[in-house]
Image 1 (cartoon, one colour):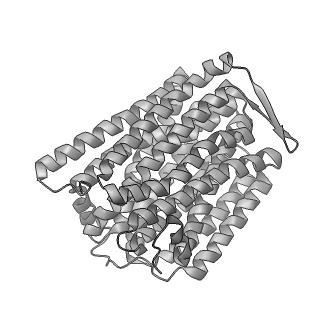
Image 2 (cartoon, rainbow, N blue to C red):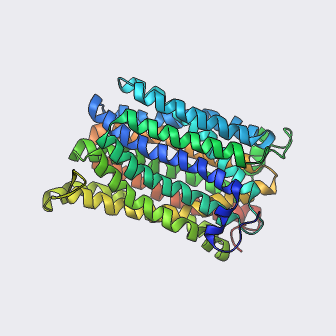
Image 3 (cartoon, rainbow, N blue to C red):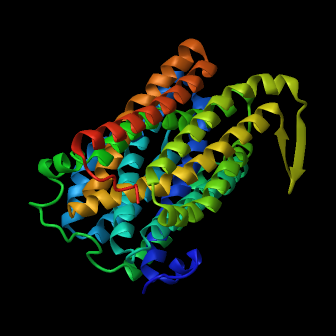
Length: 430
C-alpha cells in the first residue's frame, strides 16, 4: 500500500508502522540511557576519560559489527535481524539494572551498541528499499521523525521515571515498549523485505571501493567522520555536564533535552518533503552542520549564565524543577541543535540511499555511512573527555564545535574537488 498525500498517510502502511515501532523503541531507549549515564557518572564519581568511555564503548561495538551487518542485511532476511535487535535491547535493559560500577556500565554499553546497530542499519535500509517511487525523502524523513519523537519521549518520560521511581522500573517500562515493537515487526513486516542482492554483488570489498569512488559518497564519508567527533561528544557530555556541574535532576535534564528533540521531531518530516522538492541535498547537509556547531559553542555559556540569572522553582504533581541560567542556556543551545539535525538528516540519508541504489547495495551504502560515523564516535568522546579532564568543559565543548566546523569545510572541499576531478554529474544538483 503506497502512502501518498500528506506526511501522516505513511502511517496507514502496516509495514511502515512496524518499522516505525523499531525506531520508537530504539530511540526511546537511547535517550533514557543517556540520562541514566549522567546518574551513573555522578554516583560512581567518574573522571572525564571514563565518561568518554561510556560513549566510546557503545561506538566501538557498532564499528566492529557495521560492515558485516550491511552485507548480511543485503543478502539475507532483514526481518530476522530486526527481531534479534529488539531482543538484545531487552537484554541491555536487564544489564543496566544489574550494574554496580563504572566498568559494568561500559560493558553493558557494548551490548547496547550491538543492539542499536541491528535496529538502525536494518530499519533505515528496509525503509529505503520498500518506500514507493518518488517518496523516499518522505518515508525516510517520517521514519526519522518517529525516532526523534520517541527520543523526545525518552527525555521526558524516561527522565521523569528515573527521577521518580529509579532505574529498575524505568528499564522494565522500556522492555515492555520494545517487546511491543517485536510483535509489530513479527506480525506486519514481510519476510525478506531487503536482501535482493547476491553475496557476490553486495557488501564485499569491491562494493565499498565502488561506493567510495563516487565523489558524493567520498564527501559524505569525510564529513561524517569529523562531524561525529563533535556531535557524539555533545550527546554524551551535555547530560553529564548538567548533572555533575550544576546538580540538575534527571527529570530536568530530560526536559532540557526534550526541547531540541521536539523541534527535531516536528520539523524532520517537513524537511524530508522539502529535500524531495528542491533537491541539492548537499546544501541541506552543510547548513545543518554549521547550525549544529553554533548550538554546541553556546553550551559553555551555561556557567556564566548560572551566576548572572536567578533560579526559579517550577512545581507540579508533587515535584519541582529548578530552572536557572544554566538550564536556560543549555535548553536554547540544544534547541538550535534540534533544528540543525532536522535540516541535515533526511538529506544525508537520501544521498546515501541514492548512491547505494546505483550499485544495488543500499544496506552496504548505509553501512558505509555508519562506519564513517563510528570511526569518529569511537575516538571523539574519549578525546573530548580527556580535554574536559585536563582543561575543563568549556574547552571540551568548543573543541567539539571546532570539529563540526572542520567537518563542514571538509564536506564542501571533497565534494567540489571530487566532481572536478571525475567530471561526474552531482546527484544532488537537480
